[in-house]
Amino acid sequence: MRYMMLLSGTNPATPPPPELFEAIMKLGGEATQAGVMLDTAGLLPSAAGARVSLSEGKVTVTDGPFTESKELISYALYEVRSKEEAIEWASRFLKIHRDHWAGWTGSTDILQVMDPAGAPPAG
Amino acid sequence: MTEPGYEATRSAIEAVWRIESPRLIAGLARITGDVGAAEELAQDALVIALEQWPVQGVPDGPGAWLMATAKHRAIDLVRRRASYERKLQEIGRDEQSRSEHFGEPDVDAMDDHIGDDLLRLIFISCHPVLSPEARAALTLRLLCGLTTAEIGRAFLIPETTVAQRIVRAKRTLAERRVPFEIPARAELPDRLASVIGVIYLMFNEGYAATAGPAWMRPSLCAEAMRLGRVLAGLMAGEGEAHGLVALMELQASRVGARTGPAGEPILLADQDRRRWDRLLIRHGLQALARAREAAGPPGPFEVQAEIAACHAQAHSVEATDWERVAALYVVLGHLSPSPVVELNRAVAVGMAYGPARGLEIADTLTGHPALAAYAHLPAVRGDLLAKLGRTEEAREEFGRAAALTGNERERAVFRARAAGRPPES
Image (cartoon, rainbow over all chains, first blue to last red; front, side, top):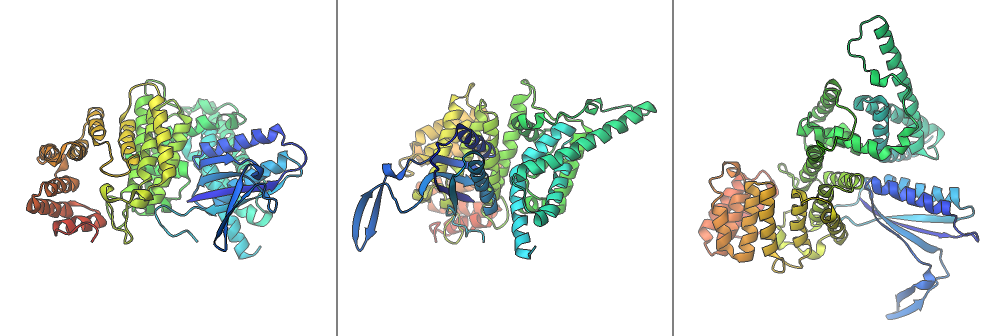
């Protein structure tokens, strides 16, 4: 089963400590070594992006930042055997933030990617 | 604790187990020198977790908790064994003392060497002293954390058979005193070929079930691909490890397009290529690039991946570089000669240079004993004959193919063509 993980959060005033990056690299290495991580990348603040929306038949473009929501920070694509396994990896990722960057709050949304073989998702 | 909460904890434990068990067993095998004992110790830790966590809650670092718990039991076991063997020696009865386990176990080294230990575990699970079936079962058990019931379902064999296979495999490894180590340089090519063979067998078993109603069993494919990525990560300098990953990912990229709405198989030529998995194609091509960069001449998996890449990069059958495919089959035929490779070359030559040329090659294979019961020989001949307008002969060939295949879905396709209907109907 493939899962898209979207990490969003609010950064504290302090800059991210180097230990956080080290821990992220280590965990990413573990996930890669376990053969479960297919893809991952960090995202720049929404100030560098734009939003294209459709409403009442009209397509409008708004430049970032998107102030109304938490910033999306990164995405990762995992290939695992159960939702619980995806939850475990996501929990480890958040615990790293807790342990290395005081004051950081955020969440990971775990979304199952539609099976290319068209099999029904596991309940 | 309420039942749903208990169930949720159980699922969480199972997930942690799936993630941690290979590393756990690998580290424990280093301490005990015995894969069977290592697995039992890891299982013991799992049992303790299943008892404690639903009551006390899941610990903050569940992987580390399992590792610590299992380590303590491993140290106990090694000490008990050492003292037992010392006593045997004192009374002069021990002829074959396992003196290598006398010292204190090097527990702290466990975390530093986890990559090496995993690799050792892969090599010992795929050891040539074991039968190919035993290698696959043991690998799924030790490196994928599958239960015997799950392995039985994957291979369509009874759970008891799987359990026996695994018990016997562990006993063989212990009796033959197969060391828990990475093979020496001289034997590495053969041993690596065995590992790659086991993983690819697993993949194929999942990709194209040879018997029974299911066209494919995707979970086996996923396990094999995951293991392949693990292997390629641990042996980054080995071209064939990357070739294996590339081949599996490129083949798996077509899974979504390989079956129609009723589960009927759709052959490569008729697939809707927009349904191919772009991510897996990208991954497969990256792995192929790594295989090309590796030292040494290309091996059979890299060449097969090159062929798969020709298909993956073509937007249609017509746009496929069939001349390159045909040439690659010549190379593959030199590396691993087989009548099946030759049959595939016949298909490629038929596409590149016309069905008559393809049929010439296919016709040389009709008397081959290894292909006497191979459904794809008459199917390929049938297709080439149909393209040449020799309709009656073509239908006869498809009738033969339908009688030979063990795959029910495939039989339906061949029967349809034998009856002169297009494969879709």
